[in-house]
Image (cartoon, rainbow, N blue to C red; front, side, top):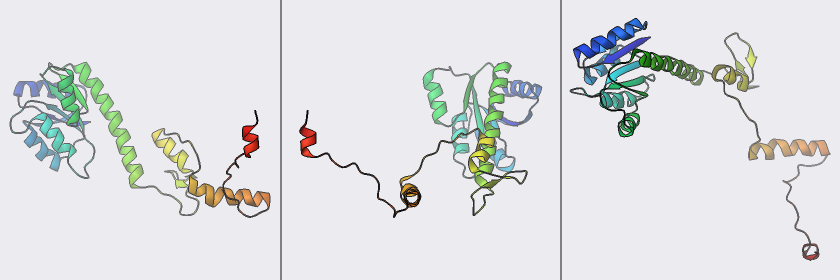
Length: 208
């Protein structure tokens, strides 16, 4: 996986670079948030590991700028910082759009776990994006064609790709336009209005 590391400290950047390459990732580097934004414009990267405190544009400013881009692929953002991991710092980072939060010194096992999660989330995000961008659906029966050219119901198509299960009900419009006429056909008469229970006579209501 290609990862952009953003760190103004040369030693810390070298340690992070070595750790990520050891884990099998491709690494590109920037010395601050402003430089990182320029790199993302010409060389899109789906994962950013950034320091918090940097000159010119800090980690939270970089994350906000990335989240503000229109039409760009989702970027998984890990904030690596020497600041304490207290709830206020974590809340500030999350509100800025940060996906994960790690404290220095770097723990290779911790960042390995975070990157595995990033891979899964980005894979799912890509699948959903592709599904939303193009659904080969029949204009008549509304079935969807899968990659093997088989037609299947939309529920099965989406379930196979996202794991989503569906529950079914009938909306009020379809109940009036479809269900009631079908019931009337079965009864052999005209469409009937929705059933409304009649109030009981006054004498029945008063009976003990």
